[in-house]
Length: 540
Length: 62
Image (cartoon, rainbow over all chains, first blue to last red; front, side, top):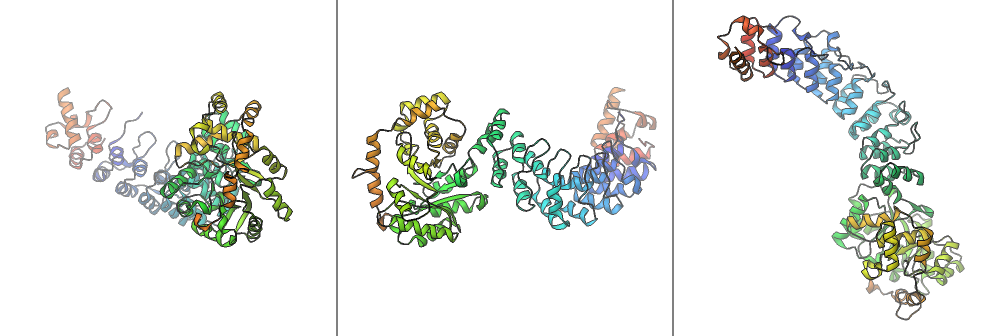
């Protein structure tokens, strides 16, 4: 190894006066003294010593300015790689070649896009640099920007370059990676969003190994925000993908995928329940649920917290299209369904509901109310319509009125309150059960049921996860566990990380006593009797 | 000799021209530290322009 020279050391450390002294009096070719394959100019450019570069550049002939090191990088490459914008300006003014290629055929623009310095990218584009140049492995400037993670650079490329979008959309390197694969592998959530949203990249395009960006992210151990960003952008996954991620030990990514499992009609399988989630708890709870990958919220006019939920939604980075919001029209509002839906929308800060339900089947009024929701659906104010707390006779009343079947019927449903006949009827009519109170309002007594405990122990899960899992598997239900606590929200989402076997389902399905069901539906003071009669405005 | 050598390099590191004045041109040109660096190299690394000027004036060029 050759020793470093005095000039090299002065240049590397930014001592411009020493550099000048050595240049003036140290001999004609002192600037050619390299350390290994690095010239004094390269090291000064790489470290961003502007004054030194200025002092040196005058001594170099144009050919010397483009001298390269062992990797083929010129001083300009090095300045771009390390985002030294003033050095880039100086070198270009001195005559450095803006299109120099290193041994991987990467050009300064590639390096600048990777370093994420939009100012340098702008300067190079001003110089007419080719934004469609490919490096040796087929990588484009969009791959570089994606891996570097600067959305500013991406935005600049999209505005400045002709046909930028169509070029970026077809830019695939020799391994079949799109820029979105590069962004996912480098763990840049905002870049993933931008590449899909503003650049129009296909979120499900596969590389030559058959992997879409979501699987690349998962196998590369990407953090939650990256996995969630890809899922929000419409990344699809299969049970095989989840199994592959688990097999590779990526249980976190597998879990984030699994909790996005859809029910029929593209309704999410997992909702955050919001009953009794008030004020700051609602704001914080919704925000942490969104971080945990919940995308669906179960709300209601009656809960009196839609303002707070709206505030949480306003502050979140999730696209409306990735969210799924359900609300319910309260009994006192059944005569003014549209006004009630509009009130809910205003409070939530939304312009449509994904799902709207009639809260209780109030006699003489619920059929009209449901018909009104169907009319709102035709006008786009609500996407899907459903009902809540309906028994078979109530559902039959809708059918008799010639109305389309509700998408869902939200009912209290758990292994300890299994409305088998109702669920069977709903299955036969394509009505998806939404199960509330699967966690028994957090009541320890019921969660401590011995059969729940045995099954939970067998799977290494909690009783709550077993109860939710039962609703999902035995009833095909959507679950809506409520919690404002991030840890509990994680626990509840864990219902999607395991499966009960046939014996478990059989045992759990046999726990409900006929008298518990009768007490709920038929008795004088039962929940159903109370609910359908509870129609005063004062209750709101 | 060793002590003199050590003192000369320390003078370059801290920019002390006076401490080098007594040394002969030959010594200034040929002294090397453990990493084969010269006095000029060490003074350049630490940015001491006066020492660099002095060494250049005494004919040290590497």
